[in-house]
Every structure is written in C-alpha cells, then in structure tokens.
Amino acid sequence: MLSQETRTIIKSTVPVLEEHGTAITTVFYKNMFEAHPELLNIFNHANQKQGRQQAALANTVYAAAVHIDNLEAILPAIVQISNKHVSLGIKPEHYPIVGEYLLKGIKEVLGDAATDEIINAWAEAYGVIADAFIGVEKDMYANMETQENGWSFFKDFSIARKEKESENITSFYLKPVDGKNVPAYQPGQYISVRMAIPGEQYLFNRQYSLSQAACEDEFRISVKRDADNDPNGRVSVYLHDEMNVGDRFEVSAPAGEFVLDTEKDTPVAFVSGGVGITPMMSMFETVATLTPERPTAFLHAARNESLHAFDKDIQKHVAAMANANYKTLYSDQPQGYITQAILEEYVDITGDVYVCGPVPFMEAMIQQLSALGMKEEQIHFEFFGPAVALQTV
Ligand code: HEM
Image 1 (tube, rainbow, N blue to C red):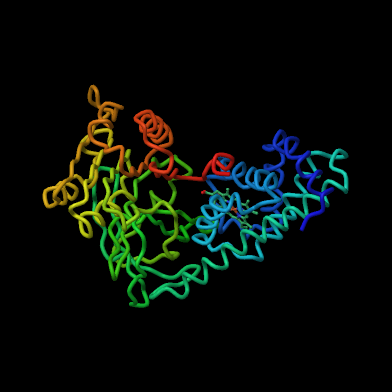
Image 2 (cartoon, rainbow, N blue to C red; image 1 turned 30 degrees about the vertical axis):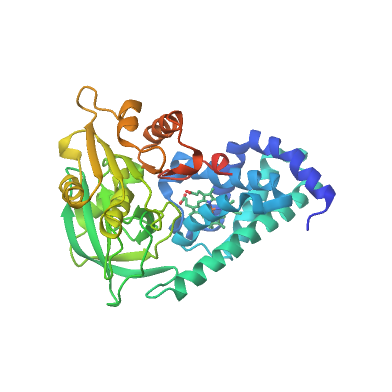
C-alpha cells in the first residue's frame, strides 16, 4: 500500500512526466537497449524506430499511476496489454529492468527537478503497477499451459501449405513440429511469430490474427506483403518471398481479447478494411459453422478486386447461411467507400458489430456506427500495432 504522501507526489508529477514524455521514453529505451541488447529480440525494432511503442509503454505507466489507489478500475486495459505481453513471452524478471531504465530516464531528463523523493515515489508506484501486470500474466501463462495441447512462450511450427489469397495477401497454414494438435482458440485471437532472418542481428516478432475458425491440427495466418522499404514490413516480405512449405519458425499460443461472443444468436456484423479482414474471417467462419441461422452482415473495403482476399470463401458461406448479407466496396472506384448509409442498410443496430482495419478506417466506422445509435458495448474493435495507451486506460 502506498503512503498518502507518495500518492500525492505521484499524482502531482504525472503532468510533468507527460509533458516530457517523448524525451524520457527516448532516453529510457536508448539506455535500456544499450545495457540489455538481448531485449531487442523481444521488442519490435520498427516500432522503436518510429517511436510508437515508446509512447505506449511509458504513457501507460503514468496513466496507471493516476489510478494507483484502485488499479481494479483499469484492469481491462491491463488485461489487453498483458495479452500482448504473454503472446511475446514477457517474463516477471523483465519488469525490474524496464523499471530501472524508466526511472533513470526520468532522472536524466528532469535533472535536479527529479528529487530523491520523487524518484522514490515513482519506484514504489512502478513496483505496484508491475506487480499487477505480473499477476495477470502469471494466470494467463498458467491457463495456456493447462489448456489441452497448449503451451506457454514459443514452440516450433512448420509451414504445411502456402496459398495466395490476393495480389498482396498470402495464407500460411502452420502445424506444430512435435506432431501435436493445436489448442482450441477463440475467433479473433492472434499469435506471435518469432523468427531469425538471415543477415539480421536480432530476432523478429510479429502478431498475426488467426484467419480461420478454430481447427484441430493447424493454425492459419494470412499475411499482407508490405512494401520492401517499410521497416515494419521485414517479416511480411521475408514470409512472402523466402518462406515455403516445410520451413519453420516459432509461434506463441493464441491470445487476445477481440473475440466473437459465440454464445449469442443476435444479429452480428463484420466490417473490415484491407488486411483487417483476417480476424473477421475467423469470426465469420465460426458463425457460418456454429450458428448459420444468425442474422449476419459482412462489409468489406478493399482498394480493388485484385487486392480483395477471401471473396469466394465468403460468398460460399453466405450462400449456405439462412440470413447473411455480404457487400464489398472498392475504393479505387467512384463511391467505393463504406458510408453511413451503407452501414445503416446492412448493420442491424440492435446487435453487435466487429470492426477491424487501418486506424482512419476504424475511426470513421466507429463514429458512423455510433451516429446510427449503436452503444460502445455493441461496437468491438482492435487496432493493429500498439494500442494508443491513454485511450485504453
Ligand atoms: C507492448 C505497457 C512492461 C515489452 C506494450 C503496450 C503497452 C505496454 C501499453 C502496447 C500494447 C499493444 O500493442 O496493444 C507496459 C507497461 C509495463 C510494461 C505499463 C510496465 C508496467 C513491459 C516489459 C517488457 C515489455 C517489462 C519486456 C521487457 C513489451 C513489448 C511490447 C509491449 C515487446 C510490444 C510492442 C513492441 O514490440 O514494440 N506494453 N509494458 N513491456 N511491451 Fe510492455
């Protein structure tokens, strides 16, 4: 339990830390990776270069500190981040390292303004926040280990099939090298892949949504090939260009909270843009298989026909379902956007809607669905890439 004095110091210094946020986190990561280069096997190097994850981690520590009296209130945000952490194999022993360098970053940037009193208060608060994460993650790892065919951290998988879905999206069917089946997962969950790329010093980790309904003996991910010069695209380019049937890499067990509620039979709509279609495929196939009577709409936005993945698969399912509608819009064509009028026509606003795609697409969809009268709890979404920390907390 933090003393009242410590809490007062924490709350009064949050605005200062936020103000110097970028400077502190830049120093923090630079020093941490100099002292612990092995952590570059875990962190996404492209996010580091772009400064995105920098902001996410430290901002969340500050935001959590505001709720230090009642961390329960931000448990949903902790759980969401912890899903990402367990997918990446973050361990309890990593927390003191992050804490040490975050505090050193604060001290270095604030100089004399960061008195011992302030630093000690933050050290204490960080410890409380870290313990909350470690506790949640311990339970998640335990669940992964006890689930049938489950595991924690990473295990070897090999590519069983590689199938082109569109001009720039290819599916990889993955089977465990130990010959076991895969655990049942919830539609919408993702895995992390971890691989060594020849010529690169550190391992690469990326998360990919599972793109088919749970299947006993394999996972499927469907990967968009990014541009050659996109630093974030290194893994996707390597997968597309260099990895073939029989090749191996490591995979973590399914994680993530952006999942379909399979218990419901009320109307459901899937709204996706570009490669955001991948978690939708898993959810939609699950509805088509388990509850084909469920009123279902699928709206998809792609640039053009050649970049449109899974069209035939979706059409096949729709034809076999009692009450499903499907529409695709191509943004290269006039009026090729999902407008509020189209949402109104297809989405039953008494049900649930799942949205996934690029950030501006999602923002537009969420705003329009809200304008149609859907409530926050009916609109489910997941941003690709680091969550914008202060929005989630
Ligand atoms: C991702 C917060 C500790 C490694 C994240 C994200 C947040 C966050 C907000 C983005 C989540 C998302 O993408 O959805 C925190 C907080 C921590 C903490 C508040 C301490 C209390 C750690 C530790 C490690 C770690 C100890 C490992 C040394 C990562 C990695 C990612 C991540 C690798 C994925 C993003 C990337 O690769 O750049 N964390 N984190 N975090 N965190 Fe943490």
